Length: 247
Image 1 (cartoon, rainbow, N blue to C red):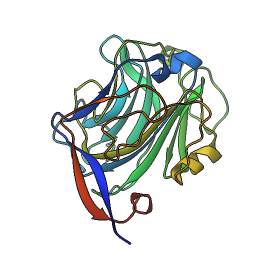
Image 2: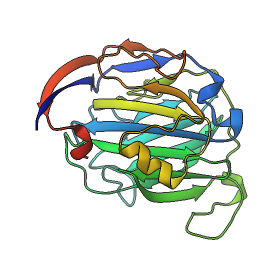
Image 3: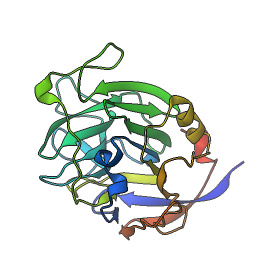
């Protein structure tokens, strides 16, 4: 049955939410971090992208103090090989550079809700789509598969900076066009079974440091005191099925 949902929609040009810096949002604080969000890209090629053709739709980091970020690539990129609509979760050293992260690259339909979870567990990043594990990459050390290994000169030592957490962008170098809901952050690594529980609508409270439901609640943190400021994004009432069933 169709119901009215209020979606916070970002215009892809200059809209974002900014949440002041806090140690709760840094991998370095506990050595682990999990971030969950529902995203609805409304286009497959973003009007304000960067580098080879991607947007940072959430992240913490700026020049000289990079930490972590989610990306989504355009349908056409200049990467070789191309990365059509790849969705990634990266961790970085403070000076930025390539970073190390995990991704999935599957067909995306504009207007489709997708549940994404990115995890840094002290050794590796992992990414999940709609409750299912997709990929993992070691950002320090080496080990047996399935996680990818990298040479020591690529390894990451997460370091806390003072940049704010932003939704819809990371450092205002690119902007997401679409909607974002139910952003949650934990100061620990979620287990695979817990990711499935989050996808189904229940958030484990252990280690939950911030929760932005973004359903006409401005940008209130229902789990703590990390409230955010909305810059430009607007609420749109739309008739559609529960977005969990459309991802």
